[in-house]
Image (cartoon, rainbow, N blue to C red; front, side):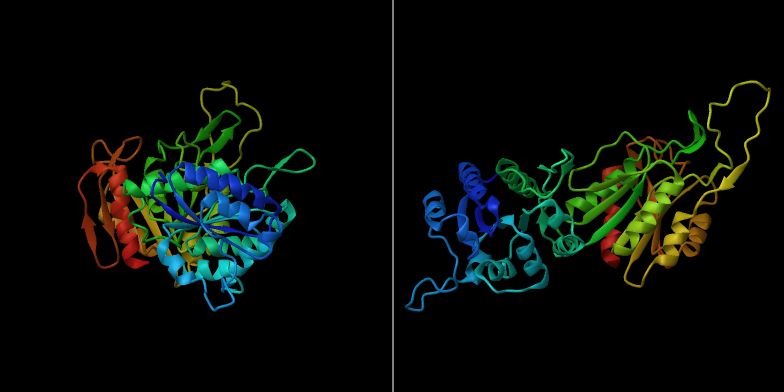
Length: 403
């Protein structure tokens, strides 16, 4: 929904600058008002006259518009806009944005912007993949910027890669989708914007042989609800998921794993970069000591499988946790619920723990409902049975209180 929206379009010195014309056409077709701000190098690739003809507005490039001292106010632009889109955005501009190097009108406008900022990178694959570029992109994400990741680039070998700017129509659709969700209240609360949150979800499968495994009934519904709730509040979400049939929003980075060892490796790799982690996965506590490489045939009346303990992901992250990080756990209990949850809270170094019980009919595994208690060191809050999406909101409210 772009009708009536005021959009500042930043254009930088990329060969993809000509595509800005198509972006403007899509935005205006949707009913938006567009003001172009272009870098000096951007004018080497496309003329301001062309852009002005499309927007029916003078193109802004320099701080001073005339020799008489008339100047362009980047502060006023920041207050005027409903959003800023920088497309194409070069590696140089990304670096300046990440480090506050305000040496042109576009960057000063960006630094003054009060509205959401969208960034569509455009560069060759090697530049895009370089650690410095990736670090700068992560910095922009941590500032709350929305990166429209390039998906359509191709290497000479024919392998799909990244680097090429996303297509104008897709970029316009991203903005339209954002405003549509904002209108519906889905983005009304951006209290987690700039925060990085890791969530584990679903079961793990521990192989007995190529066709059998030890697992549990977890559907992943609670973990996925938590991931969606964090994303709705503006967080950068990494979801580490065991084998489930669930899907998640494109804005959520999903890492698929199968066994506890894979989940452990993914979680310990991702966690140091996070502001918080929510461990919702139902991880198997034991695995077969030896997994057969061929299907075990039914030849005897009995079969003995020796089990070994799996990695304790929660305890490992509890030891890794810094003073600035928050760690949230789950406890599914069948008896002595609060006593067992309290022990787990302390042992794993959780900031709080979410307790649910198999005694609550129609909740936990496979269900769309849950009934939980949220326990910290000094307080326990009991909640009524409700849909898991609403339970997720209760849990994230508690997380916000301590972030």
